[in-house]
Length: 201
Length: 248
Image (cartoon, rainbow over all chains, first blue to last red; front, side, top):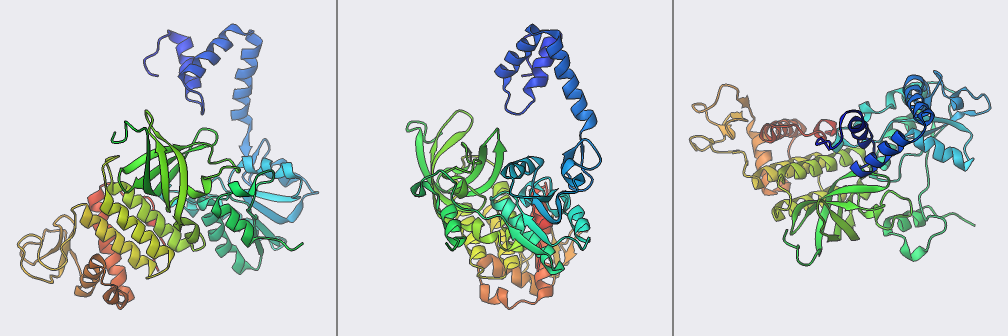
């Protein structure tokens, strides 16, 4: 990538685009030429959008979700149930849960999961902030919605160990069979979990 | 590459580390029985519908089929032998120890594709002992670290002086000097070690669990301190998971 074929500005743009996730040198070149050939208004909008996102978007002081104010829309909403907090790894997970329309409580974004091999421990996540929120006695339930992989499970185990002694109800998202799939293709871990968490009819 | 003619190859492996790649893929670092440490791409494993994502988690012992590629090999099929990691997430302390074991194994197999059968067997054994909760988990970790050092050619001396071979036990322990050192040979920055801690380390290295389990907590702490300091000195760069291990 460092051996640029084009001169000056166009190569700078290709290099900048190439650093984005999922964009290789070929795609970067294609996007750069698309921008070059399109109306200057489209380019100006793009520049403006990139600038404002960096300027305006902050992290909610309460839950750590992305927000344009000091507190995010969900934390500010008085209709949301403040007694329940759903703990997730990333802001993207908040949106995924919001899409279900099942949960009307508030969120807490950890910013990742505990993974000692990558140097991420409890102190690198927003766990201290969560514990601070829990000192408010109105909170009665914590739903741990970390990813259903080992890092997520271990993070949930760690949090449960911290929170349970406080007398707060701690629950973990169920895991099991994906809707719309065939049983025979399920892996043994997922199928085993589905068995463990089966429900009475 | 040893399997360049066939393109497809099969091996037994333990998963050391996973990293996200692109939208839904992962790069999986594996320690295999025949091919040493390799990195492979697992496509689409982060999607909820993935058929083998659950088997490709750190600590899993798997039977794997790979397709050799230019930069990375692609993982095409996975069968679980034992999902050790799955059993360990319910116990935070043991899970952090599992991570320390996996990271150590990665560091001791520096060269990719260089067969490391002893280290492989050692990791499998360590994960098994940990998942079955067979011994005190802190002792399992120290035993694993000592044996990894031994396989790597850095076995510390725990009885005779490492310099003049004068029979011990000696009171001094030197990271630079290769373990136990006698009064006359000791370098200036030597630590002191109790004979009980050295005896415990010897027992852990040789797999004498009866002796190891009878040791007192303070000697276990001392031995852990010596082992980790010795390990960090030989690895040059510290292990990231080790400070996060909760020692009993």
